[in-house]
Image (cartoon, rainbow, N blue to C red; front, side):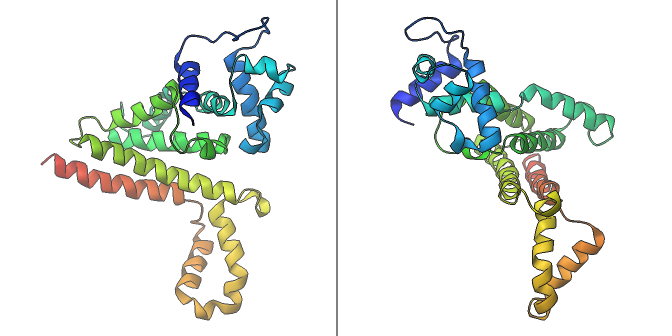
Length: 254
C-alpha cells in the first residue's frame, strides 16, 4: 500500500460511516460494497475482484463506486473485515468444547487457543482468498485486531514476555495458514478428499511400483491407509505446538 492508500484504508475501517466524496447520493454502503466484493472473491478468487466488477454487481457505475472507495487496495481491506468471522463467536466454540468435556469451564489458555485456531481455519476454508489478502504490511480493521486480541488475551497471565506471547500467536496462526494453504492448493481433488488423503492416493501408485526404493515412506503411508489416520495434520500439529507452549508456560511459572 502507498501512504495515500494506507490513510484511506484507516479512514474506511476505523472512521465514521463514509459518505460519497461528491455527486448525488447513490444508496451505497461500505458494508454492501464489501459484501459484493466478497461474493466475487468467493466465486472467482481475489484476482476476479476489480472496481469495475463490484460496480457492475451493485448496478452502479465505476465512478459512483469511487465516491465511496478510492481503489482496489482499500476495497480488499474492507472485504477482509467483512469476511472474517466475528471473534465474539469464539465464546460459543469454547462453551461447546466445555459442554463436550474437552475444555474446562471458562477455558484455560490451551483450550482458548485451540478454539481460536480452529475458528481461524474455518474462516480460511469459508473464504480461501483471505490467505492471499491477509499478508504483508496493511491496515487491519476492528474485527481482525479483535482476533489478535483474543489470542493474546488467552496467554495473559501465563508468564510469557510480550515477544513470546506475540510469537506464540504467530506460530499457531502460521500452522493454521499452512494447512489451509495446502488444502486450497489441492482443492478439487478426486472425490473431494482432504489433502492428506489425496497425497496417499497420488503416491500410492508410484510406491506400489518402486516402494523398495522408499521403504520408510511406503511403510508409513501403508499404515496411514490401514488406520485411516490421514487428514489430521491441523489438529496434530496444533496439539504439538500447544504441548511446546505448555512446557514454556510451566517453565515461566517456576
